[in-house]
Image 1 (spheres, rainbow, N blue to C red):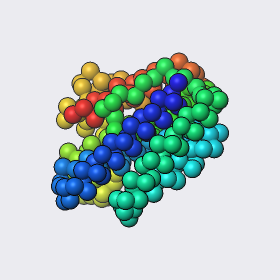
Image 2 (image 1 turned 30 degrees about the vertical axis):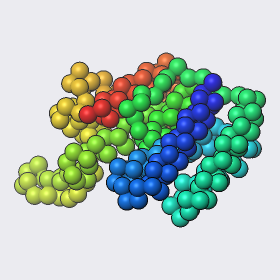
Image 3 (image 1 turned 180 degrees about the horizontal axis):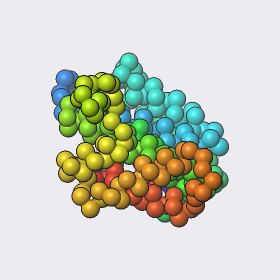
Amino acid sequence: MQLKAELEDLKSLIKEYFKVVSDLNKYKGNQHYKLKKKEAFIKINGLIKRLNQQVSEVKSFEKLKEKILIFIDEKTEYKQKVDLFDEIELNFQDVFLESDSVQTFDSKHTIPSEIPFTPVRLDLEEAIRDATNGCYLSSLVMCRRAYEGALIEKYKETEKSDPLKQIACKNCKNVVRANVFMSITELHKWAVDTKVISDKFRDVGFLVPNLGSGGAHPTEDFPRDQEVANIVVSTTLSLLKQVYSR
């Protein structure tokens, strides 16, 4: 059951965070533990945001979430974190019991571990939920959003600048528009040219932005189709795995 598995992941992350906080309490200022604490913090926040969209019927999760947010707050003293950790462990039992009665939708798509807990992953998860729940057009749009977001992140990381371009007049070559953001198709071409995306995905990669755009704009002949949505989700998963593996 996906909900229970994600709750287990959250519980493990809380334990990981508490261990790092305890280590930092012993070895104050240690950069290794500071980095691990930041990584765990980001993962916990991302998972809580995702679970928020699934557990509206689990009333005990709100109480658990409030305590977790205080627990990971930088302003919370270590002694209070120790007390909260014990309370959170007990609250998890209530959430697990209540979540047994919640209906969830199983998906045929699995998100690769390479894709981090960022807004891109949240977009991707929404795309998968939409495809699973029969919202096929919105799934296409969220796939496009996820891929574009990942490409922008990668471009900034690689080129050390925003993905901007200058538009010049074809005749006089003077710049007519400066600092225009690159389109998703231009970013995809950049990713293939720089080997972020495999060359064999050069053509199939355009499937995501093209169908995502089609899903966002009303046309009579555009398919509201389960198979199309699942193909685009699978393609997006493959593309994002490459982006975050390089």
